[in-house]
Image 1 (tube, protein in one colour):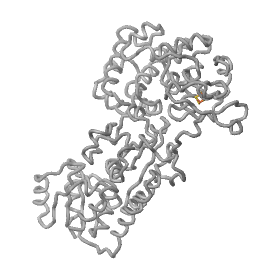
Image 2 (cartoon, rainbow, N blue to C red):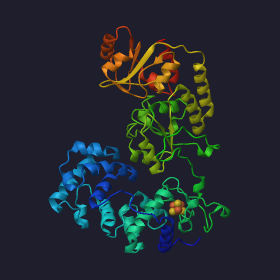
Image 3 (cartoon, rainbow, N blue to C red):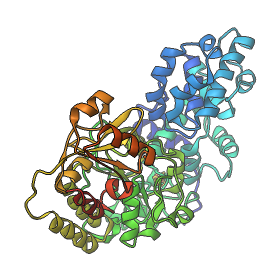
Image 4 (cartoon, rainbow, N blue to C red):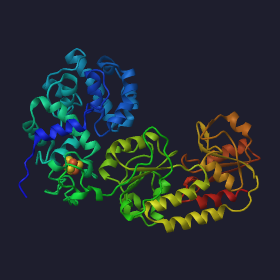
Amino acid sequence: MSPFKPQPGELQTRLRAAYPDARCALDHRDPFQLVVATILSAQCTDARVNLTTPALFARFPDAAALAEARQDEVEALVKSTGFFRNKARHLIGLGQALMARHGGQVPSDPAELGALPGVGQKTANVVLANAFGVPALAVDTHIFRVARRLGLSKGTTPEKVEADLCRAFPREDWIELHHQLIFHGRRTCDARRPDCAACPLLDLCPTGLGQMVDPHSGVRFTPAPEGLRPSGVKERSASETALQSQSLASLGGRPRPPSPAPSHGQGTPQRILSLVPSVTELLVQWGLAARLAGRTRYCIEPRWIRNTVPSVGGTKDPDLGRIRDLAPDLVILERDENPKEVAEDLTALGIPWLALEIRTVKDCAAALRDLGHRLGVPEAAEARAAALEAALKGRRRKGPRALVLIWKDPWMSAGPDTYLGDLLRQGGLTPIGPDRYPVLSDDDLEALGPQVILLPTEPYRFNGRHQAELQKRFPEAIVRRVDGQALTWYLSRTEAGLDLVRSFR
Ligand code: SF4
């Protein structure tokens, strides 16, 4: 095999053909907006930044407004981008520095730009290139990976890779190349699943051809037989044999229940990240603890997983950078538990996800079967689902009017169309109140006239004082504090929830 020689000219010709739309993915109208968006993009997806900046720029349209901003107000606006306290501090400092030193304008001098709060070399390069057209080649995680795989650099730091790229390509092509390589990294040369089989650069890529070990993963790709290669390509990488998982819903669409399981073991996820506490517990019950790559801080059962499975933050605002670093091959979500934006961010990161939608006890049986298939444990899932369906058999009478409160100050309840509402129904009580999770005034509570009031110990920590207070106001009703996990943890504790509710019939 002849020694590999990079061919920068040919590479760029093909990149131009493959990504004619390559451009800065951060929405901005002027240099000020671009600096702000680039600061926010640290450890965050461009898609999420683009969702965040419209409200931020509406409230703080220029450096003068930002210089006068209150820290808590900026924090609230940029919270979803992660590291929001630091970012808010940097943004206010940026506004103040622009006002104090540059008349409110973003400087185009690299040294002055780099001296602004929150602006490192990478941010400065991005701003110089995209706002002022100054040739620069900021090396981000995608460019670092792609350049090394293509044999364009052996550098082990972004600075060294940048220097190698700047040497290999003409200065006038740097800006364009920057965007092309990022697009290539996002769309084809994925960190964990590079699509070498479809890659337009394959015959120019020593990693894809198996001529060298992948510098990103340390694995050597095995070339596939020639007949299977795309036309014009001499050899083919083994990426087709890499684990492939499938996203289950398109961006902007409503998350859907899981897809049917793959028909072969190859697609069975091995690094599962659960953003749903009860699903995390279910996976352990199914003997899948060793395949749990991550959990939220609310995934606390069984207790020992707190020491063995890394946390990625909360269910509503998980740390996407942490999730990306854990390299899951499947993230499990639930529609009420996790915001739609989390799914959108995962899609933007190229991480497969699966969203459950649990609104009834019967949904639990269906979700158990789907999850079991997807995760390669269909027998355990079928046994659990069948037992649950058996527990639902028999005629239900219309029992006492029951209300589950899930929050205080203001009061909030779980409505008849929620999982909790159906659990009451299936357990022989009659769920009352508006649908979903309404806020209720004291007058609303009186008007509903509940005969049973359940106060689960989570998500709100109802205590004996709350129980006594409500009992005094509803002396005829049964008011009880109940095990919140039994009542609210679907799938892993649905049977326990049914038993609990039936005890009030
Ligand atoms: S052949 Fe594979 S490793 Fe090489 S650039 Fe293409 S996707 Fe990346």
